[in-house]
Length: 72
Image: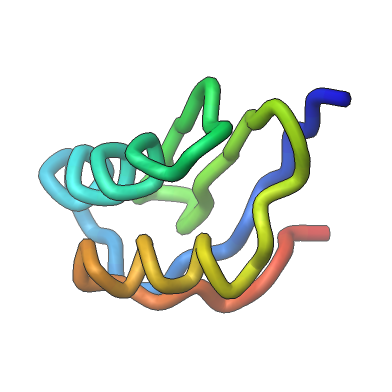
């Protein structure tokens, strides 16, 4: 079952930030699409199955940013 969830990410300020987050998150197994938005401070992740928050947080941390939580 596919899943699309939007998360809040702190620290992104520009297009380079978006590309870094997109690159790290898209490398996770099962991820089919990623859309980071620095202006909104969000990343929307589509995947074949829900991604564990810990795995997503690690990928975002690797890009140099912090996963704050799921967006409302």
